[in-house]
Length: 221
Image (cartoon, rainbow, N blue to C red):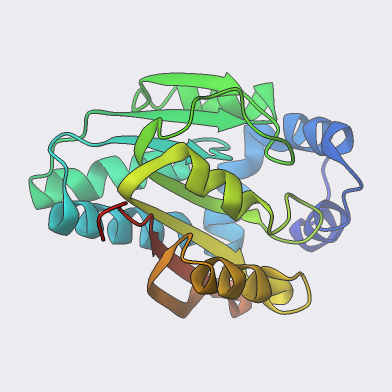
């Protein structure tokens, strides 16, 4: 389907569930990078990748293993890989999970992932607790997509002391319950707030996001 990017986004932000989302993103996969990077100035993956690389350099561990949740075509994985290389940080591997096989095929072509698999972030993933040293998520916490409960699943998947970096589209930050959910997690001691900042999301449209950096508490902390 050849449609203007604003029309496509309006449709994407009104998705009704995982099956509709899978079809929509399979259909979009081939042109997704051009549409978002060139037409929208989509910068969230770059900002998140740089933020996570810096956090991992500060916090450790050596050769961290990262999950890219809702990896899409692999933009965040590629940006994280590049940022880590600039900082001299050696990654132990990046695994990607996404609802859309079409998007995963595009991600596979980048050659930056240790593994890629399908998964529905509206439900618990079939992965053990504490599977990763860090998690990155961009472009997924927005209208018509996963929802704020995903943060609890992210915390489950990241080991104590690990880091989570996620972008939340500003349009859903308050009304979508993301701010309230993060406040709840912080108050319950289930996550530590390292930073939550308003940052650019789509530069060409003047759209922002909240770039959230969380640390999973250590038992002895």
